[in-house]
Length: 225
Ligand SMILES: CC(C)(COP(=O)(O)OP(=O)(O)OC[C@H]1O[C@@H](n2cnc3c(N)ncnc32)[C@H](O)[C@@H]1OP(=O)(O)O)[C@@H](O)C(=O)NCCC(=O)NCCS
Image (cartoon, rainbow, N blue to C red; front, side):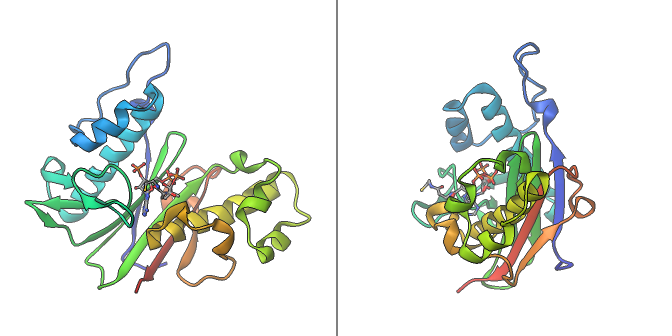
């Protein structure tokens, strides 16, 4: 794995309300207006996970560059919708005093875990994507038909139970990490992204991320254009 890459797993359980306990502790940062707007359309637990993940990412970016988190402004970008402080989705980014930060960022959520990836001072054209998945979500019939390329279907054929779910998760996290790196997301059919031998993709161990061993994660780092 590229030695410039910084990975961090954050447990956001304390920020997610349970129906009996009411709202969790405030995550300490005032959300951006676009984040508040997106959160307002969600159910309470999804909204809390969303805002906690966003706050964790802002703190992470601030720490990587040694800037107070409260001074950073979110500036997301989407190939379809453009970029800027009013955008609530897409590739994450931040500005400081209106200047874009020299920083690649990516993030993913799985339950109450957030996986953050960052790289300071990237070279021109470099991009980053990260993903984490709970294999238990991938046990359903039909996953292979909608998600996997032909060679990948052959690679999982004959597997069952936990081995099947973990191998599916391995392939799926590689695909999502790759599609976050390109910025296309699932606008691209995942069956068209063959990830068995793609250069630039790395499976991430729990030791590398700090995530529980039950989760599966991957990172993509590459040069676009
Ligand atoms: C990228 C994508 C596959 C991730 O979805 P997911 O599995 O539900 O969520 P994950 O937890 O793995 O990752 C979410 C994070 O991915 C990142 N992300 C989202 N879209 C991204 C893109 N186009 N490029 C890079 N990163 C992206 C964001 O940081 C997002 O965090 P947020 O929820 O705080 O905004 C999905 O969001 C997608 O396909 N997006 C493109 C399509 C789209 O957004 N269409 C609507 C607007 S035009």
